[in-house]
Length: 280
Image 1: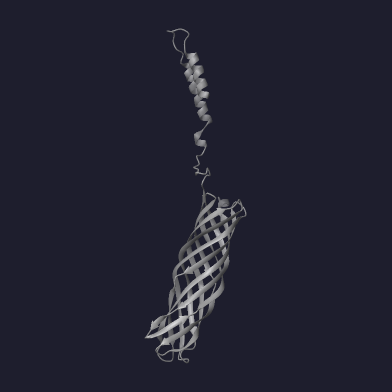
Image 2 (image 1 turned 60 degrees about the vertical axis):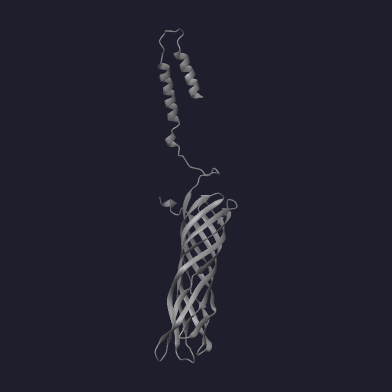
């Protein structure tokens, strides 16, 4: 509109009353000055250009850290192998409620109605203990006898992907899962074998592939702090530990004891977005 008015005024001043008279171009110079002033007023460099998605919201990515504590209802299932024509079989499982705790660091990407979160998580698990049964079948069969089992120094390192959905400004829910590695120190002991011929013992570090899936609910306390209560099912692939007989005679390997850990876990987490914002 401003340009049209300026052009009209300048054109009116520049057109002579009679043909043959010189045209005054000074009006066009004045119009250029007006246009230059308007360009300086609307400084394009001073106004940032922010991309928006189809909903009109500007996407953002925010880093966060999370502290995690909870209860792990763990189970270790037993298994065995053949040895010298006999079937050395371990049966049963160890069930125990243990403490788990750790943390995660990740990035949250704004998505329609929520977030897409990618993180790396590390957790530790408390010791668990119980008994399984050792059975010898086939040639030289003997009655079953108990084996004391312990698992200590449990740990896991996971890469997770979670999708958050918001009900309103405060409440939401999420679902997802992850994969990685996990392990524990496994040991077994039995002080009787075929009439106290010797002591059966075995121990090893079990480190295997691990995975988890989970869901939960979130409550946003503030712009930067979110509480999270959730459930996860966590599992590791089976690992193997050698069983050995220690006796007055020669010692020998009895077979391999396989173990597979899994757990249902109830977790409470506190997530803090942009934790180092005030350090700038």
